[in-house]
Image (cartoon, rainbow, N blue to C red; front, top):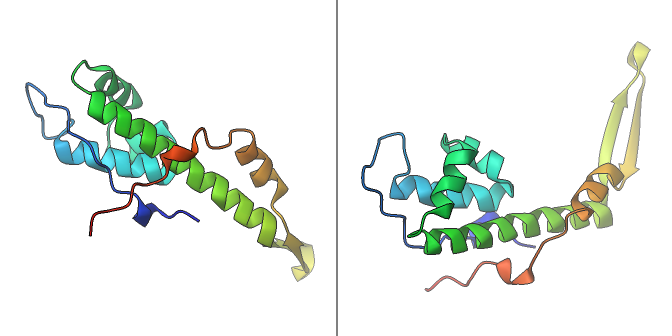
Length: 137
């Protein structure tokens, strides 16, 4: 199973005419890609680094952003692959759910989390080549 520690972005940061302290610095671009790989959605990754998703898509569309755009696609595939692996892990090994009832009675159920599994299976990983490239030692 893939983990986020298996992912390291390899890209050339988009060069900007002006760099704002709250804008797309090279470090913020790297952090966005790591967040995208960890979370699997553009909205969540943009929110995690304090940038709007519209700003992220605008950066990706720039003429000189080919490297960033390619790494974006790889990070997104990596994140979706991790979500798929997680769903399969839960399907195979199940989850434990504790339900509290009135009067202090509780019920413990063990088994697959069907709702989560069905959600992830609706959008399986797009490509298997989205796995992390081996890091140089």
